[in-house]
Amino acid sequence: MIEEKVVRRWLADSPREHGFETELWTASLLGQLIQEEFDIRLHPRYLRVWLRDRGFTPQRATRCGRSRPPGRKTGLGRACQAGVRRIRSSTAASPPMRGPHWLRTVNAPLSAGDLRRLRHSVSRGRPFGDESWTTKTAERLGLKTCLRPRDRPKKAT
Image 1 (cartoon, helix red, strand yellow):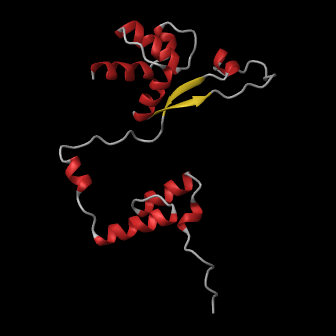
Image 2 (cartoon, one colour; image 1 turned 45 degrees about the horizontal axis):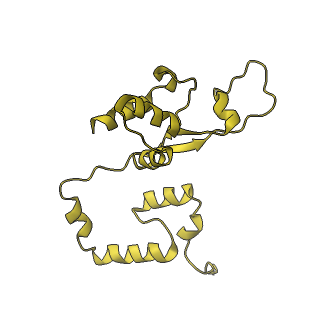
Image 3 (cartoon, helix red, strand yellow; image 1 turned 120 degrees about the horizontal axis):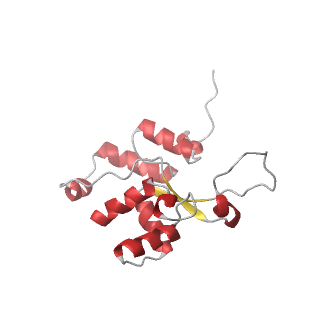
């Protein structure tokens, strides 16, 4: 667990502070640093999954145009030209910690109302949760159509 805290602190820093030539973290760079510091060799693909589970997401560097206005720097360096994946902390909150009674809570039976709402969400392919979260999540994921009632709207009389 101490190693995980150390790695999270590294990701808050710039890779330059750890001796690398780039401003962006990649899974390969992080793997090199972990191997140097802890003598543990991890595959970059595994590191991407590990990071994603902890709220960090790999991003592709944007392609650079051939010409830029004078004096404008992208800050991407070689990563921009090579299309290397970089690591960024996701804006979403990290998953909540499991409490001492987590298993009991998860395995508890649902109320009739919650069960009906869950079945409705599954049949419509919509996110399941309270209304405000469901609306925000559906908009963010482009699922607005699953929030509308089925069939045509009734004619106004």
